Length: 256
Image (tube, rainbow, N blue to C red; front, top):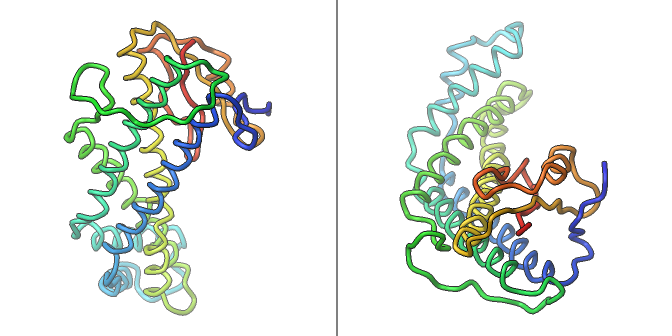
């Protein structure tokens, strides 16, 4: 693997303020979304899921492990799907809107400023117009629903594995996996990066830029997918790869 074009540990010029905003954006989203998740999961009992799982597979340990895990995951998902997840849903929608605005501000800065200039910048205000920084509420809500639906399924799988593989307390082990929110954090990170990338493209659209390039970013080396995206550019605004290429991807789209 090759080194990243944008080295996050040694940022210079315009990338210093751009990535100061972006890394802070992700850190804040992680904190806010996980806090909402833990409030929403507080008090959840997976006792009914354990009972349903045991009824489905019986008490025998001879049942195939994969079958036991799948049955446990299905039982957990029934419990999770019965909740509204109001706080988590709102936190995800807000994170997506903030990311879109942050991406727009970054794109606007990249278009209008000298790339040797490391002057900090603010996120500008704007109305809902073509190429605006704002993500409409219905788009944000749809994003939150998609992220939450995917995260609940993968969380149920994780909690189901913990339940099925437990040697002591299946309910507690599954509830611990649920509370950790690892799958939600990954799904939220992808959604934030996607909204950020969409915001960048909106800024380029507003500026009537014709082409963009994918720039790899990382602390050291980057993956083959991101390298391929960088090598294949430049792209038209409508033909550019969608951020992110993978969870925790910090690559960006810049004017070509």
